[in-house]
Amino acid sequence: MPDPAETLVASVSRSLAALGARLVDIEADPTVELARSGSLTGGSAATWAEADADLARAWEVYRTVDDLVRQAEADPDRGWLQLETARVPGPDGPARPVDALAAAEAAVDRAAAVIARLLVAWDQLAARTTAAGTRARAAAAADVERSVTALAELLASDPLAVTEADVADLERRAAEAEARHTAARTASARVALDLDQARRQLTDLAADLEAAAGELDHASSRIAGLGRPDPVPDLDALGQWLDRIAAEAETRPDRAAAALDDWRAAADERRAALDAALERARAAMRRRDEARGLWKALRAKAGARKLDERPDVADALQVALDEVRRGPCDLDRAEAALARLSTLLSTRPGGAR
Image (cartoon, rainbow, N blue to C red; front, top):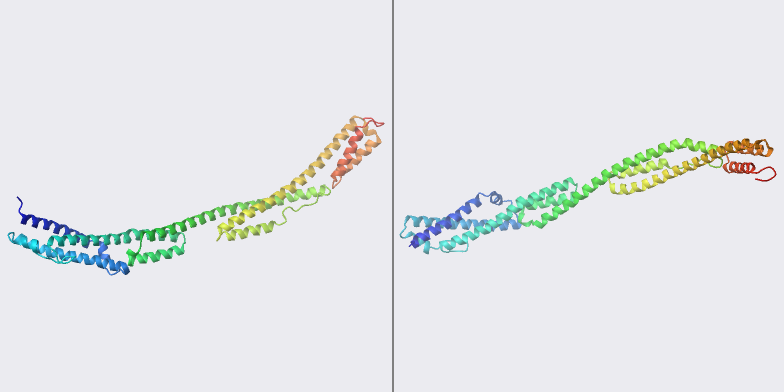
């Protein structure tokens, strides 16, 4: 049957060894060293002071009970009685060694919980705050950077005052700033591409306008009543407008993008006006050419039928020729003369067709 005295001594020794191991590990923890450096303020300083006092009381229990265990081991016959009856200072007041050891373990638990909270704040929360600061700087978010600085200072001095929610909110703001910055950069890049395209559009419009000038001049000199249109009278103003948009894109790409939409619409209108002017000129020139072609066909018809020997047909041929060759040509008069000629060629002498 186990000796009660030996069992008590062995049980207390095991509890004492476990307590000692925990205390040694805690003393070697860098977090504890930092907490004892005097950097803590506010509620964190008060919480740590209580935790450190728990550790001190646990050490006192350890040393006192260790002396009693040594005495019991040195005097197996009577030493164990001290472990049974002695009262030692404990975290909760004088108590039997076994109870004092249990109270010391509880005190170490409380201190370990505080140390764990400090570690989370100085390690995880601080790292996340630093990362949020990096994102804020990259996004040029000065307001978020100021918040990061303030939170980092609080983490250094009063870390237990910083919560997970505080850091999460900072991360959210940094992420939003980063998203805005990314969107702005994307918008800037897109506007830059759109500006390049708009400049090419303006260059092409200017080149086509210059190329069209000769054709419009020629048509207006050949066709009566056509006139010389100026389809893009504000080309310079269109270029100045584009320059203003490019300047605005440096600071407000969103507004520049909207203005560029309006510019493109205006440029498209000028392009449409140029195309319409060219088509009108070309259509008029086609009518003149078709009139000349018709005159040749009617002359051939008159010759084939020997009708060009008739004075009225000869006169009508000459009148129509004069009209189609007139410069500038009155298309309506030329077509009317051709119509009269065609009617004469379709009418037999004496009025029958």
